[in-house]
Amino acid sequence: MLKKTRLYSILNFKCPRCHKGEFLESRRVYNLKKAGNLREKCACCDLKYSREPGFYFGAMFVSYALGVALFVTIWVATAVLYPEYSSELLLGIIIGSILILGPYLYALSKIIWANLFFHYEDTALKKN
Image (cartoon, rainbow, N blue to C red; front, side, top):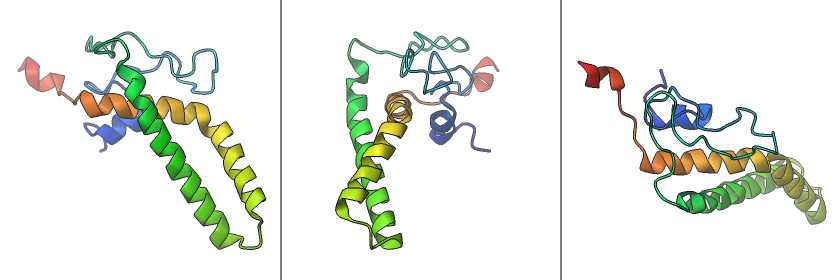
């Protein structure tokens, strides 16, 4: 159902063009030795994931936006649900969650950045 959408590619860390090949070297984003490492190209459609050196530097802006969204979400949710918590405790919860979710946000920012520049192409339609 979601296949052929950017959301499918992003949530499953699949190739932005064919949605079949793996985008990351390791499916486990918490494997810190390979965290955020990309494959050179897609095994299914041969899409080269990096257009030029430094292509993924733009992903740090996406990562920043994801971090800010997480910060605001946790701050508002905690302030509404637990108004008696101190600001220091709220900040501790936010810092802890950003440290825990950091590798996932890092990988997520790269696949989001790639999906901004590479678009889905149905290879079955091209063969006909």
